[in-house]
Image (cartoon, rainbow, N blue to C red; front, side, top):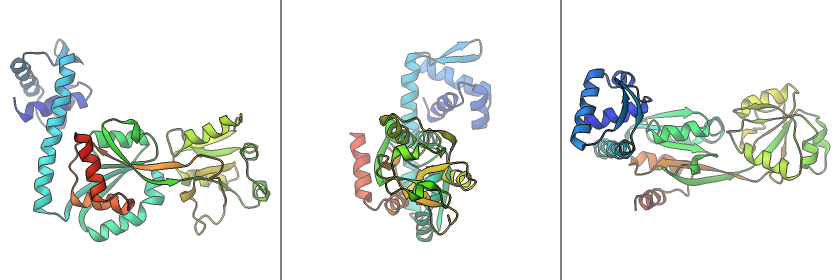
Length: 309
């Protein structure tokens, strides 16, 4: 048994059980991979894959357990490399953060600016996607850290930590009738066409739940994945918008008006997620603390340590 065989196993699983895809990804031949997997099966005394001729069609029950262990071994191997890199060059390397558009556009810019100033030799990558996509990126090792409001806490393989609480607001064109209301209510909001986030994003489930609890059926005329799109269509007069409060910037959104909606919808919590058993470089801890000052290196390290027990 060797690490290369485990890499072949992992890549075959990652490529949807396609040996050709694994061979292409690992720059090797299909016969070579097939031979090594067969040698591993012979050594372990069990079949890892179910085959139809030369084609792999499924994973056996013992194969699922073997793949899980192989994944942990490969992950720990990467951690060993990280430890070595940490001591060779403590202020250089790479950090990939997977996050949503709202976080990347409105919450992260000052953090990124400070981080790049502090670590000019670290290559910082921002990957944007929906909460499910960014969670998967951390699980597969494509990203080191995930930042989002939804979904992250649903994955047992991730350690999630709360960063900050935020609320929604209503945005309208100037001189909209809602601006004259003395008390903003869901009933009054529901009288107008609404533009808000897609179901996977930024507290949409809480928006829906608030209306449902009052027996209201809002007219959602358009859903979008980010606040900038929502604001664009509100400016065009297609409806009022419900967005994260942080997404309204008076200096830039001069053609819009904002009404606080914290009393209408439950608050949301943005979280950071890290893969269990992950080894974080020193600058990764610093990035997290810049984003959420209460998440010091000790707090994050203790959380990761507890998950290992």
